[in-house]
Amino acid sequence: MTDVSPEPDSPDVLEGLVDVRVTNAGSKSEMRSVVLVPDEGEPVVLHEQGQESLSASAGLAAYAGRRVRVSGRRGWSSFLVHRVSAL
Image (cartoon, rainbow, N blue to C red):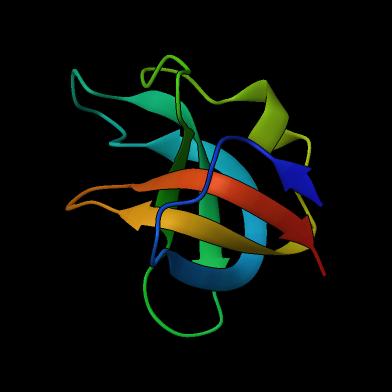
């Protein structure tokens, strides 16, 4: 289990497979992102608190291809990760 930062009082929790892929392809916002492909629903872009949001986080990218549980805060376009655990 990796602590990225202190957890909020009541964090959001997601589980799924981590992937690194190009998001917003073909637009001026195109970038390489770490995404969580949940068991149900659409993929969610993951960001680490305190890391540059315009590039894939190396810490989160290290989980590519693995199933994880992430906790943190879900925003309108991404998920701010406070804790990640490999499953």
